[in-house]
Image (cartoon, rainbow, N blue to C red; front, side):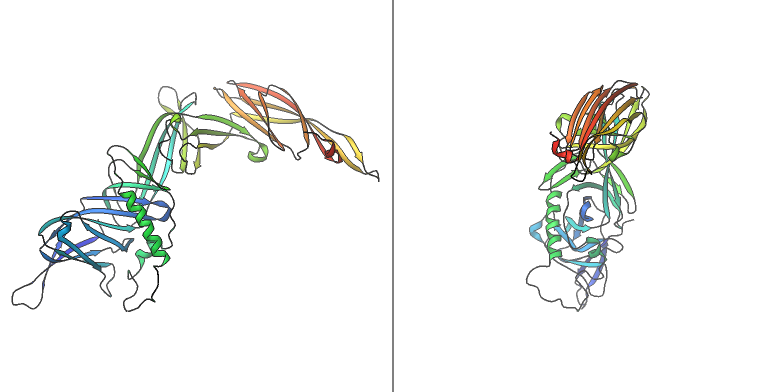
Length: 446
């Protein structure tokens, strides 16, 4: 049930009577409503169209926002026809009356006139989440994007076109606080101190509204999600319309892209991930990966794998990510796995090449570690594994042997081994690490 109440009061002068007669006319429901939700600031621009029945002369329009989170100082009305014959003179807030505004309208036409009413409200929010379905060979993925819109504004919005803003705006006055004021512009009878310039909060709110109105003016198309850019903000228009009652959440489809190329990579780094192997999934937000038209809002991606011809799915993992700009790579941590095992073992350890100071105390030496690493792939597909080994010094030499594929020095104290494993296969390799300590560091050569 709608909580916003709009009543038209037509003041009609009566012959021989020293007072006005007031006729109450309840307006018809909204013809259209558009919600532009700015998540980062808990702020939504609402644009609704209604048909007012006006008479020639003075008209008064009563607007009540009880039990909602509408900011009354943001209310505006604009005639969409006969604008040169209709003067919306002002909006007043009667003293000692809460949640009520009165528009004074001078009209030189009679009959129904379409108007647009806009205001800012809080309590509407959205969040993005995604579902990825890998093919059996895990080389491509179907990517579905969704948004969940939640309405806690106190107002029902029927058949609303929903637009979502990606970007961050800084405002000092929260819309929810403005909505909860007992009096929109302060308590009646209290005269504010004069100020040379507008206050920062109201100026911030004005700038935010300018941005939102500019975004809301952008054209929308039917049967698709329109994504358009403006400065550092991005606008997503969701296909069609949805009724979003107060207290409800609704899931809306944002996009559906098939056969997105992906890279699966398994990583082992004991100091960072512990003794388990961690799986990563990566792709790029560009046209080559069938994306790249717009940034991708941050959210949670749940990944599944298709199994067999029956359309069955097996759960693979999930990862949250931040906003992905166009042409940017994203690497998602899907968590630890049990079907790929890396086991490092110390096979030998010794010290040598001692140095002594004048008091015959040990001042330098070498440590030699011999490691054997076994990697087991129990999966039924090929996998690629990166194994990083970290040392406690930057003074080291390494000799390696075995089936490790590729070897790379990552930084001063880290090396990386890269292996490609066939289904249900095992690979082993060894390396001998010599580290230099104390005075022996001076003898080390890169």
